[in-house]
Image 1 (cartoon, rainbow, N blue to C red):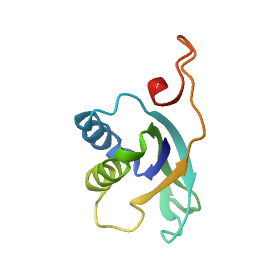
Image 2 (cartoon, rainbow, N blue to C red):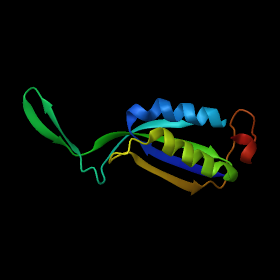
Image 3 (cartoon, rainbow, N blue to C red):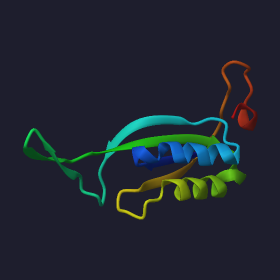
Image 4 (cartoon, rainbow, N blue to C red):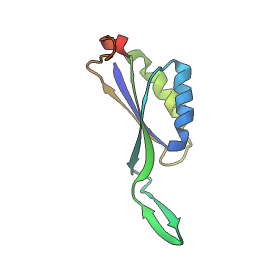
Length: 112
C-alpha cells in the first residue's frame, strides 16, 4: 500500500476529487495547509495597505491506495491540478506498513 500526499491550490480541489472518483478512489482526507517554495509568497492589499503573505494557502490531500494504482492516481491528480503556473504543488508517495478499518477490523488492502 502507498500513501499519496498531494499539495495543491485550493480552487483545484473539486477537479482533483472528481478525477479521483472517476478512477474509483473511494476515500481521501483533505486538510488546509500553508507553505512556500519557489512561489516565495504573494503580495496582498488590505484596506489600502500592502503586505506580503509569506505562507501561501494550499490544500493537502492524503489517499491510501494499492501499489498498482500509484501511477494512475498521480497522473489524475497532476492533470486535474495543473495550471501551468508556479505554485501548482507537489505529489509525494510513501510506503504504508499496515492499515485497519476500525469498524470491521479488516486489515491491509481490505481496509482501504
